Amino acid sequence: MFSNIRNNEIELFLTGLPVPPLPLTPSIPCSYIPTFILCKSALEKRAIWDEMTYYIKNSFVPVDEDQNWEFKGHRNFSSDEIPAWRHDGTKACPIRNPKEFAKLTNGVNRTRQPISRNINGFLNSGKHGTILIGVLDTGKVEGIPMSSLQKDHLLVNLEDCLRRFRPSVPHDLVKVAFIPVVNNVSELLSFDAEQAKICEPTNDIRFQPHFLRTSSLCWCEVFSMKRQRQFGLTPPLYVIEIRIAGLHPSQRTPEVSKAIAGLIPATASPLEQLSWPAFINEDNGAFVRVFASVVKYTKEEITKFNNIQTQTFIKDSLKLMRAGDEKWEVEKEKLQLLLPDSKVDLVTFLEEAIRIQEKPVYSTNPILPRKL
Image (tube, rainbow, N blue to C red; front, side, top):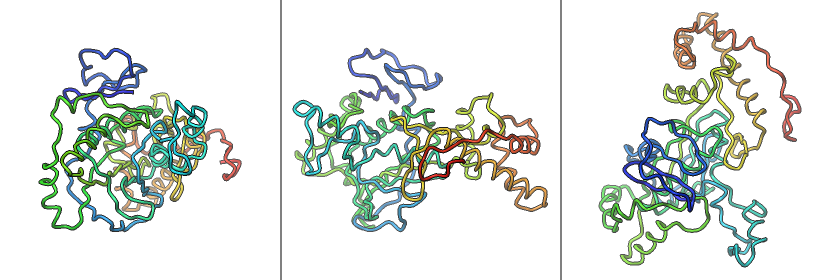
């Protein structure tokens, strides 16, 4: 899988297939096409550049892995990128040992899991979450060296991964921020100057296609390593924050509400229109964030669980209204954002949503009760 950045557009296309000479206009809806994808630049839509906080190297973050935090020491988003590592630390060769390579890449004896599982779990749980890439499981900040080419590769790679989700993930639901890692606070003032010392590529080199969906090194990785050996300078260290928005009705922003509305069909029931969809990742897996890990469920189980959470939230809000509580005005503003049509009466729509009794869904997960 190749990707190309050209004229603030991102093109993703399969190896060996012709690339269209002109990009599609930004007004055309973005959807996954087997041959190629053209969409507005993820460098603008997915990334967050207006923040300048920092991490101190070898320090420990003040949070632990829990319902809202996940630490990762690698940047492999999909299972296609997981190397075929053996237990002794060596890699299996796909040419000399094809059977062993197939076993290791299919998840047998795999110790490293793709980040897409965690993104999928945060989205399906409905609670906002943050994935810190460059922080060890112990909470120690290590950072990941990244040149501008490697940043481009990470953003394009994440964009490709999220577009393989079903449904594909809108830009407002997942954002990326590159936070510098420094040895001390005073070093932060010279961070940009140090970065400029590294010989960065010209635009002609930067716009070359990136190699995706493989554990092999992309040309941008090789280029950065050659520059490091040539000039003796390593790229700046970063902690990459993957920020997943809260999809639960109580946590939605206007932008998130609008993005979710585009994923729910108009024929859905009132309760489903107020809830959020179940996402399936690129490996056809559906996960939910449970404490500091992810648990696999079926799509039907997640949809039912999301509807129950939404129904409970609506009932609590209606109780505030009937009791004349002052908090109702705050909840009313949040609920107004969830309505598919501004002309619909809020209270009538909410009462209709909780009145509908759906068929029970039975769990196939052994750690869950049989009936949800």
